[in-house]
Image (tube, rainbow, N blue to C red):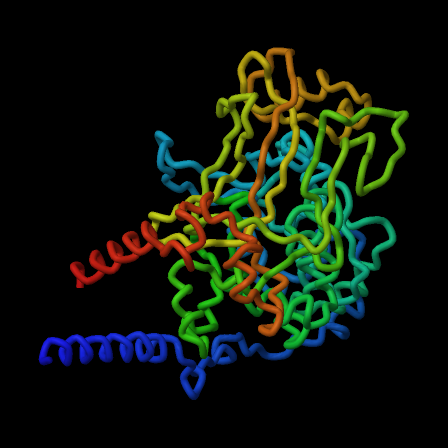
Length: 491
């Protein structure tokens, strides 16, 4: 009888445990965790009205405007000249697998959009924060070449053209009188149009963010944020990092600069924060209004008989695929990236990753992030088996004669890489972390979006046996436990 009683008691305790443990672990607390993001948003004084400061002035060139600016803002141009918006090249960093530190940026790398700037300066420099960059002899030491107004114009009439010079017809006096704190339109004049047009590159940045509604981006739409509210700036050095041109995360910005990491009312959600980036749930789609380019095939360029359409085919550039309401791809990411450098060998029959994000399920610093992946077919050298950079812009560029051999010969010379005279086209991929177009919380991903039969995640590709809700988190738990043990032993 006593054995029966003990068995009954143990069974009762087990049943109570099964009921109580989930209640304790997963019941919503009565009050949400306090979050005070507004304490971290810069509170800036209003811009000084410049409308009466240039009454007796006339500006014929952008350089003359800059010279007027530094009469009062004496250190401003020099500060800009120490930033990557000016140099287009970061400080050297040590990279695993490289024999010495590397210094990279837009100035000396290639991508799988317009490919590279070397030899193409006069076209690409329309998005440089300076004036007159038309060749390798550009003087980066001349502060008069700093373009102040591209970031500070408030008339929305200022436009840059070839060599980074103001286009004809811009009223420089009116622009100078209007200057103020950078707006989304200022930043977007370059960042919304990277890769040769609106919405081409990023996926989460395009002209729809100039004046967005809150469902497009809750920070910009509901709260009227401008870029520099998050990309905080010190001595003209704007924080933020993109793995399209960087391999480290120095001077990066994070959601946790303003928000607490574990602020969810539901503990089941908070259990994800060690492995899932905020952006993964809060940016369910990108390219919400304007389609973004996801594919570019340069091998199709040059066909004069093919109908042209900027979203499908251009003789100058080849064929494209654009997608709207794009669901991101999901990868582990620890903030660092691999980088293809000029001259690196490739396997032509395989996809070459230009900037593969670092991270894995066994990396405790990595989280699952949303990415736009852009694939392309671009030229490579058949003999030397490395990617080639064509000259496309200006005299004898591809867009002048549609002669690939001539364009690749000239471009390779400017880029300092070997060209055998024999070329073909190879597949490449670029990875773009998605951090803008944050949706209102009611539009965030729900449990069933990631778990269950219709999951948007490829769990096996992420290193899991299967959906963790069925199979558990296995290797991920071991990685996090190892990190926790390492932290405790060092404190």
